[in-house]
Length: 345
Image 1 (cartoon, one colour):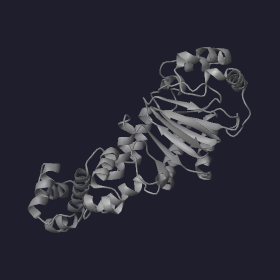
Image 2 (cartoon, rainbow, N blue to C red; image 1 turned 90 degrees about the vertical axis):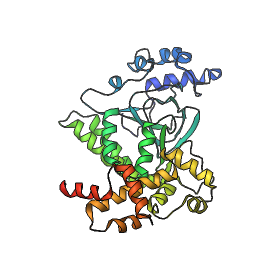
Image 3 (cartoon, rainbow, N blue to C red; image 1 turned 60 degrees about the vertical axis):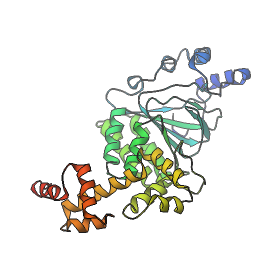
Image 4 (cartoon, rainbow, N blue to C red; image 1 turned 45 degrees about the vertical axis):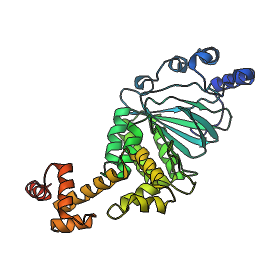
């Protein structure tokens, strides 16, 4: 089936009929798997999908071939919205139409162009009950995604900490939702990968991984500002979490919590809560981490004096700079500079 083909499959026709003839069952609402086993059996008993949908957890080996790191599954429309978890990363891409994605206790409405990246172990249910809905589930092996993501977001900065926290502390931030609109380039990546996935060619695994590396780079490069993050409540639609983190990152040498809160029209307490929720660290801890990261870079790659470096990153007291640096690196700035001079890259 072509990725944009809206024709209902025989299984989807059967599921649609069961939904329309059983309105009291509310099959489009989140439910547990046991409550809809009869629906699955009626519509899918002759389909291999049936057995996988009855598994308590959707395992990697069921969906992802041993010789690949990714898999594509078109979401079957009119499937009962059963709650489930899986051990892989799932990228749900709404190509046409819309769907409702229930993640833990949150209801996420997804429209055309929306991309939801869901971490392993996150309990969720997808509801798509229209012929016009076209959604693609892109499944990515956990180990592969973690390796690729580490390379992509390997910087030692506030945004890297935020994105890493998003994926590895899923009880607080279990998903990322990108509103990409009608981004033709992202659809080209997905179409290319989908076509490659359905062919038997040499280096198929490597090609798919390369395509998705480019996809994620483009997604973060061009749609970072269109990112919606759960649980971190901002007081206006215009205030974007990424903008706050970028502003903090750009002004770490001079900004105070009071100034940051005032700039974005929050109380200091609210701003502290937002920063902790996003990064797992307080305002002060974020500032110090950025200061020390910048100091270590300048010590290793410039001839600036230690006092000048301290002043550049926001320390008026040289002794205070030395004290904080020692706490982070267990050596003085002078010792760090000597070590780096002996071990150039």
